Amino acid sequence: MKKMAKEKILNIEDISVSLENNQSSINIKASGNVTSSGWENPQLVLHSFEQPPPDGIYDFDFVAETPSDIDLPVVTPIEVTGKLEPIPDNLKGIRIHARNTKEFLL
Image: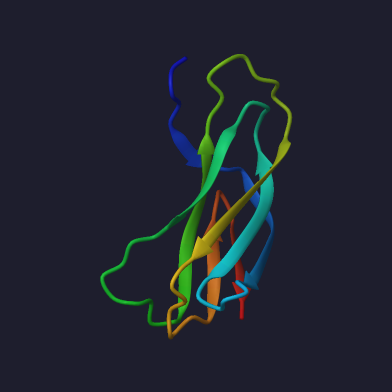
């Protein structure tokens, strides 16, 4: 079976953020929708940067593998979890990009 490319999902519905028990990282959970059945391996991909974002908001892309077989063209929910580790000193929020963008401010 051929590996499919990862693409941004259709839209983000919700973002939740929680502090790890040891307070060394932040857990991120996002839910949204894709354009059909068969999307797999959702992932939050942190944008690379040379310096910390001046606004303190860290950007991620919500991506998943597109269907490799026959799929049903129906909007389908999808969820992903990720981690931001270590917690940046200037962290003020999380911004997640799909075909839309949503922010979670701390």
